[in-house]
Structure formats: C-alpha cells, structure tokens
Length: 111
Image (cartoon, rainbow, N blue to C red; front, side):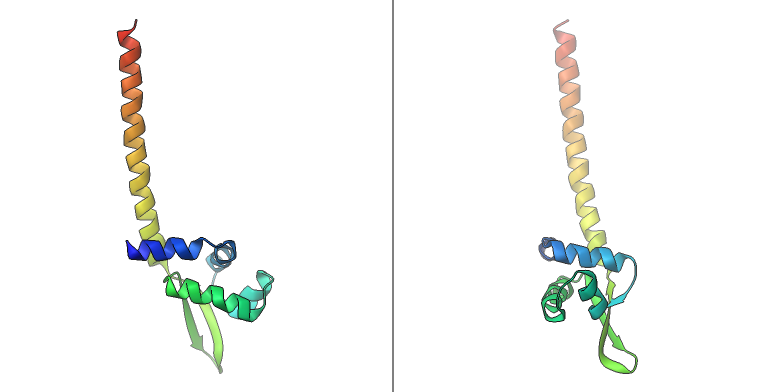
C-alpha cells in the first residue's frame, strides 16, 4: 500500500499530472517539460524529484551531455493504481447490485 500512497501523493499536484500527460506522448528532456508547463527549470526539478521518488518516472542520462536527463514514464505504478481502482469499482458494483436487488424485492412485496 505504501507504493500506492506514493503514487497518489505524486499525482496530487496538477503540475505533476501535466508532466505525466506530456510524458504519455513519449520521453522528453527536463528543459522541454519545464517549457511546456511554463515553469522554471529549478521549480520543475522539484516536481520531477517527487515523480521519481514515487516511482512514476525514470530519468536516463546519456549522449554527449551527462547533465541532460531524458524522462520516461514507468508503467508499474500505473498498473498498480489501475488494479486498486478496479477493486474499488468491483466493490461498488457489487454494493449497488445488491441495493438494486433489495429495492426490486421491496417493490414486489408492496404490490
């Protein structure tokens, strides 16, 4: 559950959700992400740190400039989040189904 908590905490900020949306389109360098969300590089760096700590993104260094980091999404935390949401949805579907059956039985009894 700690991993799910970290995922939800990282996604709680609208800037970080915007970064996730941008990364869904493909890997991007930090500078491009900062420009896209209209934020300074140091300010975005703090958001990227939270996303990395939550395991949502991965930063790769490479090429000729070791300072350049290319950010990509990691699928595992999103799969875990989807599994949890599926469990919640199934719970409520069962509860609502039972409530519907109860209402239908009650209506039949009053006829």
